[in-house]
Length: 152
Figure 1 (cartoon, helix red, strand yellow):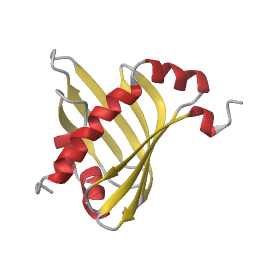
Figure 2 (figure 1 turned 180 degrees about the vertical axis):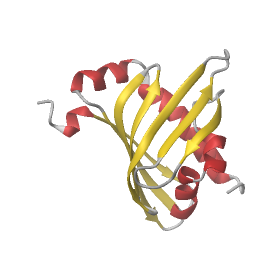
Figure 3 (figure 1 turned 90 degrees about the vertical axis):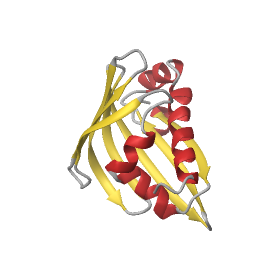
């Protein structure tokens, strides 16, 4: 069943050792996004960041070999500091997905759920085989590292 969202979703869960307000700030403010967005070894430049419903975002990630990787989308849902939803393309590898960021305060820590919803189950499986978990895992390692510093 293509309509079953669970069969089309890849989920990563983490607990960040930081208050929810800091995690939200890291996800939503351009000056912080550039410090962690992209797998280890990549640098990120923000071309557009209109943080509002209907606002567009576009980041250019430069790979160690000099090639550029484009991440872009449009914000669909913003509920500070708990939920963020955007459609997204990661060119040239991934198109037409929805990203959902869910944050729940747990004392001084933040329970983090990251859902990537794909248009079809087949596409989801293809993304998993391409190393989805490792790629995003590296990104969230960088975010976790930033959150433990006092740079926010």
